[in-house]
Length: 387
Image (tube, rainbow, N blue to C red; front, side, top):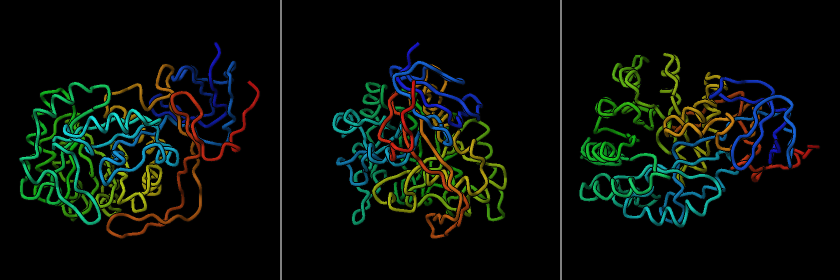
C-alpha cells in the first residue's frame, strides 16, 4: 500500500486505543491508513522523533463565526497556532443567521468546524466590550420551531443545541430558556450544551435538568455557582449528574474557570470529561488564550498528560457522538497534532486573577489536517526523509 504521508518515530499518545509509545502513523485520502512500527511506502515522510503525536485536538467550545458576530475569531488562524483540527462553535449562530455562518465561514474554512445551534434566533449577538446583552433574557428571541428545523436539515455540521442561562445570559428568566432548548433537543434527538453563569438559576437546578449525553459547559467555574462546596467537597448533585451521564466540560473563556474550584474538584478525583478553551475575541489575549494553554493548566495541576490529551480528543469525540474524530485508529479522520511539553517556569492565570506558576507547558508544533501536513509553525523542525 502507498500512503500519502507517514509521521515517523514520534511518541504516539492515542487514548482511544490506550496507546503510548514510539510508533509510525500513516494517512491516505484524508484518513488514517496505518498505525504501527516501521511503516513504509509513502509519498511524503516526516521525521517527528522526539515529539508527541496525538489525534487532532478537538476544542469543544469555541466561537468562530468571524465577521458574523462580534465575539468571533478566525478558525484557521486559531487552529494553526493551537493544534486544534476541529473547532466546535457553541451557539454563536442561531436559526436566524445560521445560513451565513455555514456559507461564509464553515464552508470556507480549511480546519473543521462543527456547531451547536443556539435556540435563540440570532445566537450570541450582543457580546462585546461596550455592548453586553444576554440573548436568553428575552423569551421573545427563543425560536424553537426554526431551531429544530435548521438543526434537522444540517445534521452534517450541527451536533447539538446550545442555550445560555444565568444572570448575565438570561437575566431573571431562570431555567425557562433551558426548558425551551431541551424541547428542541428532544424533538431532533440531539444532545444539548448548557452554559451557566451567576444565579439564577443555580448550578444544582441546571444539572438536575440535563439528560445523559448533555454537556454542562463552564463546569469548573468560580463562586457563585461553583460545583464544589465551601468545605472543598463536590456537591452531591454534581456526583449524581455524572453518574447518570452528564458530560462536564471546562469552557474556560473570560469568566468561567478558577484554580480554586479546580483544586477542589481534582482533590476529590473529579476530573473534567472534556477540556475546552471557550476562545473568543474577549479572551484570546487572556486569560484563556487557546486550547493548549488550557490543557497546560490541568497538566500543571496534577492531571496526567494522557488524561489531558484524552479530554481534548476521544472524550470530546464521544460528546459529539462522532467516534471517527479524536482517534488515530485506521479508518479514522486523518487529523493529528504534533506536541511538545516544555519544562521551566510558566505563569498561568484564571478568570478571577489568580496566577499559578507551573513547571510545564504544552506547545503545539504542527498539524496534520485531512491527511496532509498543514501549516506547521516550523517546517524545518520536521524534515522530509526518504520514503
